[in-house]
Amino acid sequence: MAKTLAEKILSMKTGLDVKPGDIVVSPVDWALVQDTTGPLTVREFLSLGLPKLANPTHSILFIDHAAPSPQKQLSCDHTFLRKFAKDYGAVLSDVGEGVCHQIMAEKYARPGDVIVGADSHTVTAGGLGAFATGMGSSDVAAAFGLGKTWFRVPETYFIRLTGKLQRHVTAKDVILHLIGMIGADGATYKSLEFGGPGAAAMPVTDRLTIANMAVEAGAKVGLFPSDDATLEYLTQQGRSEDHIRLFADEDAVYERVIDIDLAALEPTVARPHTVDNTAAVGELKGIKVDQVFIGTCTNGRLEDLKLAADILRGKRRNPATRLLVAPASPQVMLAGMRMGYIQDLVQAGATILPPGCAGCLGVHQGVLGDGETCLSTANRNFLGRMGNPEGLIYLASTPTAAASAVTGVITDPREV
Image (cartoon, rainbow, N blue to C red; front, side, top):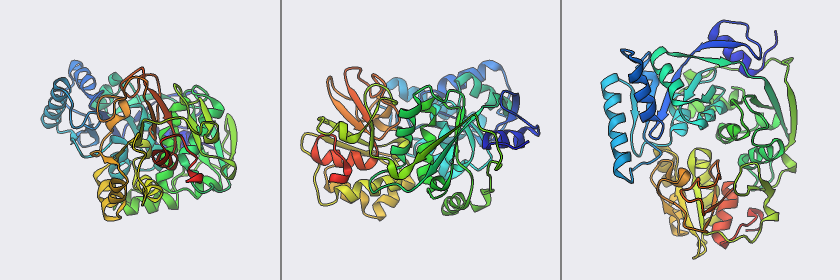
């Protein structure tokens, strides 16, 4: 039977000829938590009475969401996670070591892997051809202890990308456009599989951005094939041996096919308070922005630092607009320093934050004041997401965010 990428990976892992709707138990290659979901996961694991982790070196605890800790309770949670990692031999990624999803891409995720995480944006690793998905803390606790979990094999939507993106139109605009088209629940428990010549031409960094936000349409996973671009990325990370070629079968059966002409896309913005409330940037030009935030697991990569620096170089942020930049990992930050991007951003008036999630979840490093507006490269703009239900969050690409930092209002980056 011809298979989609999701069906092929789950068939490989289970040794079964799976089809959509089947319930399967699959081995788990990697299980991860972060510091907001991790304490609950660990307590659930301990309550199960299991003597050890099924695979300690593939069980990872990330301290990235509130790092460094802004308050005592969170500091105690961090201490709890560090002790558990030491006692049970789990991998610990501590303060300053980067955003969990970026580090998974840099160091761990492999094409064909099954990855579960107590964080919805675990789907990011689908950009490398991994069946990666977020689960509840109890499910991940069981995966910690058993080394396996169950899935319902998802139906697949095939997103066929053709054409070439215009200047200052990015992968972020692609996924915002798709979510605006199908809705925040338009792909609930589906696999979003991206292909076509437009996808084949995308570097893995762009694929990670798109896969990261598949969950914002309700998808179980967002998947790209593993091809020459995947090999190039893994080679850059010193992991060429982790590469396998992985494609859907040519005659795979899809529940739905959606065609997107990349050349026809414009810079796109998601308005408050839902990710599918999208509009072309031209419809929102002139809206005052109090804060611009560039970073997160969606757009905190080296390519984002370059895009921002290219726009901001030789300019200054608007004096009424704060500009926060958070590289997603130390690798990204160090490369940004070597390339001069960090210096360009600082000279433009940016505040550089340590590698981590920063203001994305509203715990620290960028909480909004009442009535303030933030233009963010993050993946969510729900009411209160950045720590204040009286704040407004717009989501956009890095070029749109950088251009808007210069003008102080939402701005089409093609005009700066």
